[in-house]
Image (tube, rainbow, N blue to C red; front, side, top):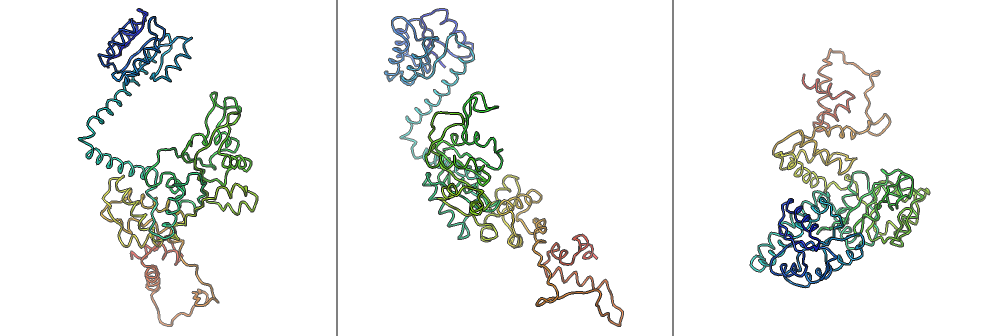
Amino acid sequence: MRILIVDDNLPSLQSLSLVLHDLGYEPTPFEDPVAALAEARTTWFPLIITDIRMPGMDGLTLLSHLKEDPTTAEADVVLITGHGDMETAVEALRRGAYDYLNKPINARELAAVVERCAEHQALLMENRELREHLDEAVEERADTLRRELESARTRLRQVTGIGDVVAASPAMSGLLDETRVFHDEPSVPVLIEGETGTGKEVVARLIHYGESGNDTPFIALNCAAIPHELFEAELFGHEPGAYTGSRAGGSPGKLELAAEGTLFLDEVAEMPLSLQPKLLRVLEERSFYRLGGVKRREFKARVVCAGNRDLAAMVEAGQFRRDLYHRLRVGHLRIPPLRERPEDIPVLAGLFLQREAMRKKKHFTALSPDALRLLGRQPWTGNVRELENAVERAVLLHDGPALTARHLSFLDEHAMAEVPTPVTAGQPGAWRLDPDNLTLPDAPFDVEALVDGLVRKAVERFGGNKSRAAAYLGISRFALHRRLSK
């Protein structure tokens, strides 16, 4: 890259030229700023480094001429300043200078500035080329951009997890409709409630990103993971020396980092009661102060909260502020547990299977009917997260064209919990086998055959599910297998 250097101090000019040459660039030195300006108008220099104080034409005047001339306007200009020139350097930045360097010039800082200018000029060149060829390549470029956009959206859905929200059930269809409304109204706080594993953060990200993406920050804070004594600084940030152990330069909090994006407060029920009035004030006034600070900072972010505890009950018990609760639930979503929306299980399982097979380079493409029946019988106390983990485990351990019930046999552990509680004597339809009141037949009989028959009947009763049959008979799964193998 060619670099024009302007400095009336010859030793400084020669030293700067030598350093840039050693860095691999092509320096062109000038002592006279007027001659340098004439050279810049006839030869393209992506970067011009000039001293501020020079006789005849100072650095600010040279900068103005360079920026006013169309042939030099896109060149990056870096000014060399002394200790008394800081106000002038700031004015130069306002007039379009790219950066400035303090005397004496540090070689490492010089190299960093020049490298940034080289990257900037590469981007400008790319933009110029795009503009020059836009007419002849507009349709082809548009198609490419559309493909890249779709690819970016796909990656976004994979990274954020928002692609895991499916709406096969009426309940989830209605919920997705509401997320679209909340996405369009960033000033409305949203409270998401649901059991553990239902996907509350995924829904929060869906509210933030919407269907077309969002380049503003999504800042998540797990309220249960922050010690109470550090919670205020974590949320509001702090100024230098605000408290013992604080960072010397201060630090922004999550309110500040969220900028114009979304602040997601997970497990909001765990927020200290003493801090809740301060959060309420932020929501009401849309501003805040850092801990130990006097500067009022504007708060523009959307607030989305989530929790698996009953906030309404906590309000009645005095464990959560009523006014904050009602402010947070202006927008309210309840994610139903997976057992209440069985229509979503096959779709979610298929989504997880496709994703895990791709990640682990397996050949699974579908779920077999018996696998779907097995998945549909599970209680899914861990909800969507448990289903995802089950599919991931099966894909990790097995391979094949279709995921079958055999691959998911470990789920029998959950099925054992579904064994009906035995009825007791006196209940309608009760049946009880009492060893102390048995009437044995007069003729000899085969005890082993009787036990085998009971085992077969139990296995048939539970559709071949050996874990449930073993639990029903009160024996171990190993003992049942041993009996059947005979």
